[in-house]
Length: 312
Image 1: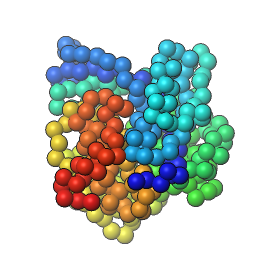
Image 2: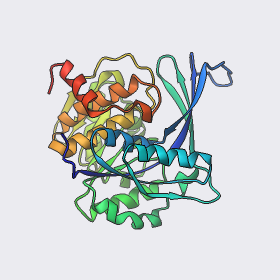
Image 3: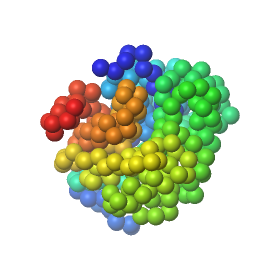
Image 4: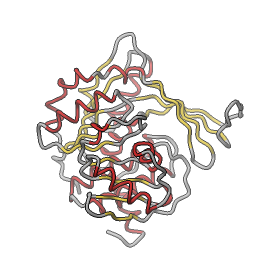
């Protein structure tokens, strides 16, 4: 089991997801009749915090919510997962982050995000969280908060031995090169392609892309390839991680499960390939369940899936 003293800080978004389910996603200008709707706690930052907590980490969430009806629900859900929310601020006269998530029967999704209170996480305010960042083994970052804030938080982590992992989603174009000053960057194939200005559609292309990300500044890189697994690079060599065969139901938070699981397992044993394998299993389980945070797996479930394939 994970060291109970392991501490992770997650700086990122906290959203309410309005999830709409439909037979297929609409084309441009088309209206489709959906089958159901639900309000589910989400946000890439909060999703990763929940995933890491369920995998055994001691997690501190750094973020912001508004003063609307969603805020209490969002905070209560994080507290229920034993996540420290003392570093989450409430903004007056401001709405909490909101995401409208359309999910079709195949599990594919389309997402629109209104940042709300997440956009108020200013770069010059990150210094207030220096103590919790310095006290953490790993800082997990994403891009649903201002890019300048992510860069500022990375600089603060660099003042100590805190490891920095960036999930560059949603990827920005152009992509600021300063964002790659991290210990690990973990884009999916489309995000990697946007960052590098190329298509990443095969394992071989992912090997080249992961190596290029390390050449551009990341100390390590892992690129997820959905049904093709993942590729990891330490700048010197690459390794392909075989995927877990699943029938996807909702892929909304699979990437968040992957990033959090990678952070937890890499902190335990410092092996990139093993961390990626553990993360692939976590992401696979999340993709078979509905809802972002509700679908995050427990550690025992991840280990059981790995064991069914004869791996340890």
